[in-house]
Length: 190
Image 1 (cartoon, rainbow, N blue to C red):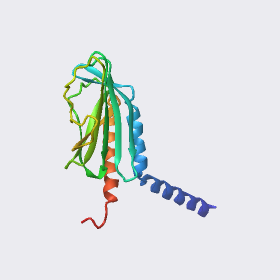
Image 2 (tube, one colour; image 1 turned 135 degrees about the horizontal axis):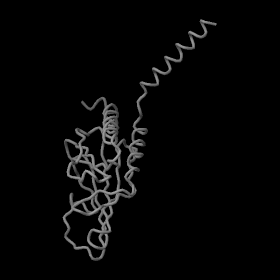
Image 3 (cartoon, rainbow, N blue to C red; image 1 turned 90 degrees about the vertical axis):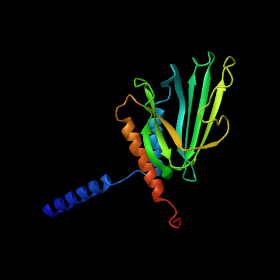
């Protein structure tokens, strides 16, 4: 009986030790980031005194191993009659060289932005703008990609900032995703 109990205890400790070493897959990591993005849905960030509310944020793993991040920021205050911009990014997470936080946002806003920096213009980005009828034309757009795909070196990722651990968790998740993507690189590319 003692031998049987001893073997059961060894099996239990071995199983729990192996479970602690289990890392998330690319798909599981993207699903975690999607969960974090859903936290900003309906929340706002203030830009030049105007509140922009986030709608329908999503992140997905595409079949070629790249990631697509999409979200819309909408304000009924801007241009007096409404304004929205939909941001779309497509990127290879293996190309990320730095993750940081934008410090220009108001610190009491529930939404802040992390940025993922790339060493070359490997990010495909697109902005689609919708202006109300009384909105002035000629507004300066950040990337000048209104309705067209362009190349960038940076991705902005909104996150729910009032949860103190979110910044660190999202940073660790995106760096884990980067490491997984790098591990899958073509062994004959060098």
